[in-house]
Image 1 (tube, rainbow over the protein chains, first blue to last red):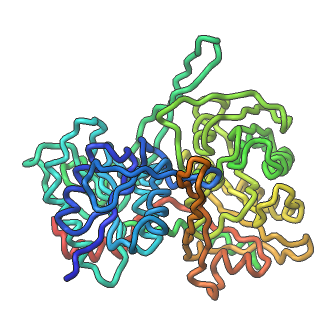
Image 2 (image 1 turned 180 degrees about the horizontal axis):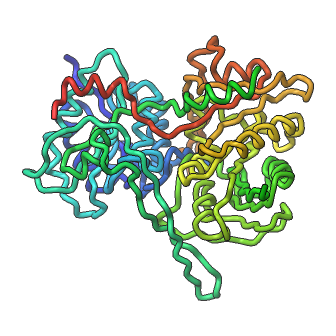
Image 3 (image 1 turned 180 degrees about the vertical axis):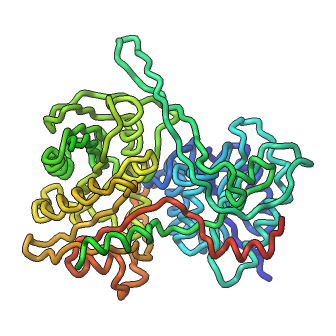
Length: 255
Length: 255
């Protein structure tokens, strides 16, 4: 079998330890291109750059076949890679490993997952990986064998474009209980804004927040899996339609 | 019945004609606060500002009870409004009217819809409105009576938090055929990047793209409704789980 061509990206920036860990794993599977933001882009969601231009800078940090830092969002990186910079369509897109969780509703705020979702929308199997530890010095190694298992499974799906949201609990190697296929837990963030005043006495705000899991006892959710030391894998789709509300509204708005 | 307290926001910036049109309609329903980006934020998706601080600037453009321009994304505006700036939780959030379509997969790139989705996540009924015309001089008036009907319906739902993606065809008043409740059409954007060179001979890129509707004949989709001069209304939910893939993966990854 021909070796796959793999694009690696992330949202923490091209020099983050998490993406270096992932690009080195990817090299074990095939030829690797790394095209990632030139600076941290956490919380960039599915943002794209349309009001200004994109720049690319050659990089050698990953020792990859093709490697560029981009002054845009993770979604920009995927679009620019697939439609301009790469000589062929990638067989797989890997995003991450993110420094911090992207489970539950975090999926829609996450630049890491938005890059994977963009790949999926362009017809490319894509996986976002995140470790539940924000530290720059987090240890990614406990997850290595599981990351390889998941990549291998996705590469073997010939007839379906798969998109996965993979989250890794922050526990020692021996404590990981295995992989659990889950649904996205229902939850939300409630923000608190810390007001401070600049030297000219003008207010400014720092956003901080607390996540609430609305269904902590639901054993089929990603939050439950992570809380019980499993790696959570949520397969992703992009239809936001609420079908139950369609029926209800059709009774009122007849056309 | 107590008059509702309504937050109006958008992604084109607080002085865009579309949001002024919407804030004036909102005043017919209740007390209005306008908290919106201080500049255009199209394509900002569900981005939030966590690496830097937010600033607010009082504004009087809408003659609203409470009015601020924020140096952040549409989602930042909703979070800051609900959790810091407003004296009470809004009864309704209106986002738009966007200058340009947010039908089909545009929903995930759209700052307009991300603001509405953020409101929904915070437990507030929310509607995003978009007109299929990018021009700053677009005529919003043909949709006015339909916008009012939709707002009225959402305000009357006591037991359910509703989120709607409403798109308006760019046609003369008499040509609008009515409101059609739809699902999100399957489609994607394929980008083309125009490469140019700056005066120092360094390349830069402009993103342009073409939307493809994968199911132009599906009469239950928003794209079909708009192509046939209906206002499309897609009810929104935020669970991205692909349930059919869960079953498939569970056979392979047993835990």
